[in-house]
Amino acid sequence: MATSFGLERGTPIAYGEDRALALADDVTALVGPAARILLVADRAIATLDRVVAMRERLAMAGHQAVMYAEITGDPDVARVEAAAAAGRSARAQLVIAVGGGSAIDAGKLAAVMVLGEAPLDAYALCATPLPARPLPIIALPTTAGTGAEVTRTAVFTNSHGHKVWAWGEELRPALAVLDPVLSVTLPQQLTAWTGLDALVHAIEAATNRRANPLVSASALHAIRLVARHLGTALDEPGNLDARGGMLVAAALAGSAIDNAGTGIAHALGHAMGSLAHVHHGRAVALALAAALEANQEAAPRAHAEVAAAMGVLPKDLVATYDRLLDEVEVGRDLADVGLGPERADELFATTLAPENLPMLQANCRHFTEEELRELVATMLAG
Image (cartoon, rainbow, N blue to C red; front, side, top):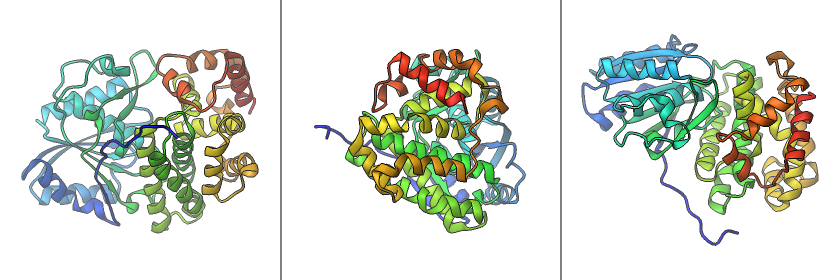
């Protein structure tokens, strides 16, 4: 056990069915009545009945919301800067980000840029300090995956096409609202991929070099919740208990990585995202499958706790994880996104890029360059 550890203060979380419809009171509490709001959303969910009803409730309370709903996939510089420009034009006092991790990250970045002067690229990898007084952020996830609603990190694609990150207390939402009703329309494939993202977050946070007992408490319970609820959420999309359990799991896992970081699965996963825009949940799930056995050998005690949280013996952890990927049909062959064995050298090099090295170095097991090449080859073999 580490001789010194702790937890940073976290984002307040409000949970409840239909909780999103009470946003007006949250806005008033944060910035006062008749607030001017920038609402950043995924394009796919902007017109859903629940989102429309949420906007109507805000208007009825006297708040004015301008919507930017052009987020599709990983947010890039152009879209984030356009969202920030919309916020400036509206003289926004607060940002509400609703959608998957990409929309929430875009909203978080827009909130710091509205009052900032530097271009988005300047904030990548902490090269430039974030503006000291960003707009407050309320985050409403519609997927149970990234945990972006509780973290100080935001991922975006920079102007060179690299998947990078910004980090700082300024990016932490002032409030996370977990409403399971918002996630019931999520397609089955995205339910699976985002659920696996939450699981990988929890496993890596509980086992990497920065793990500690306080982080593991959140991470291991997140694993239990995914094991209990992911299958039901896939089989019964309207099951609010399962959807809610997955939202809580994602938030717990998000809190865990906010304090301990991730590992090799995320280094590889972000590299795949840069090269081929592989869905993040799918990418990290496949990467962990390739690395899990070696990781377990390097940190057997931590992985024994992971196995117990999944309800299996340590000797069955790797097989259980592999079986889960098959059961949810994650899609191991990446040829559908243009990532085959012929691109192994590219993926190897991108995994070692500066934006991915911190994750690689935090992993519980050190992989030599030769071992990393073998891992990449195994993964791309499908």
